[in-house]
Amino acid sequence: MLTVNGRTYKLPAVPTVVVCVDGCEPDYLAQAVATGKMPWLKQALANGSAHVADCVVPSFTNPNNLSIVTGRPPSVHGICGNYLFDQASGTEVMMNDPKWLRAPTLLAALADAGKRVAVVTAKDKLRKLLGHQMKGICFSSEKADQVTLEENGITDVLALVGKPVPSVYSADLSEFVFAAGVKLMQTRRPDVMYLSTTDYIQHKHAPGTEGANAFYTMMDRYLGQLDEMGCVIALTADHGMNAKVAMDGTPDVIYLQDWFDARLGAGAARVILPITDPYVVHHGALGSFATVYLPAGSDVADTCSQLANTKGMEVVLSREAAAERFELPPDRIGDIVCVSERFTVIGTSASRHDLSGLDAPLRSHGGISEQRVPLIVNRKLPGLDTARRFRNFDAFDLALNYAQ
Image (tube, rainbow, N blue to C red; front, side, top):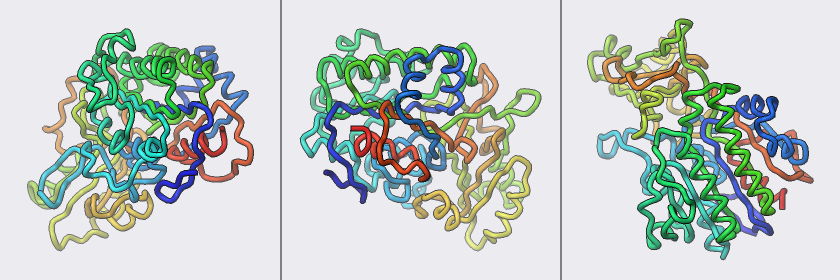
């Protein structure tokens, strides 16, 4: 038995694979299964266990991947966005440095317990967080050609996988993750493997479309190969995905920095968009969650009330209320937190968002409306309380404590 962050886990008796499918709104799976595009998943749903779970809000990549591998929400592990305002230095920074992590990962603990652990992630922004203090294999598709034994625990990944380094803006980036996972299971037989994809396809293609179904057919093929090798597979997502457009197909955006500048003066308030990362072509840094730092002496309650009445806004909360409701570290969010509705996103200023890269109607995430995600295990789970509230960060609990 192993206890990590207050949760207890059994050690794996068979190879165990936890998969985080970035941006996987449950309807993607439903549409693909219903049209015969995912035969392995159809069988897994019939013979295993399937639930719809809640991810953490903000429904972004970094907070949820770290919740999955720590088994806890951001209030424990500290990663509350892809991006934050560091009040100590007065700068806006990426949260991809392990210095921001406040809790150990289950992956590192399993490796310390003598288990062979492997991690493959699509984008390199996550690699150092997921592999923090972990002895084992950890690399990204994005930089698969730059691996070293010292840094990544493996060499010559391209030869192993038999594929070139894929483009960051492609389905190939995620396929490389699955292909690498299968090759690692065939050649290294890790006890535990964590695979994390990218949501490039989900940002561009709605559930049931040809582009989406092609992606999930590809994924289904690799998962079937892992299943044939005897792996326990737990499948979940970091967040869902929704169209964020007005009826004319243009992005439906609340430009929050412009809103504050018009009322308080230019730059008096600071709007932070935690979706921001180095890869914004497919979403323009527009998501459904924002946090705002107000000038000293501001009336927080009145500001919340005004913003809550803004068209397209779902909920506006004070720092304390947001930290409690969304299980966030209060010292890493602003004075208020804003969450927009299903079809609306939040921006800073209209002049600061380059939407020229959008070649399809905007699809994005970040809000409560993207909180529902799949949680599927290819085994029956005897003794599991099915009435409990499932979270995506229960994936290792189900895989290790019930599916073995």
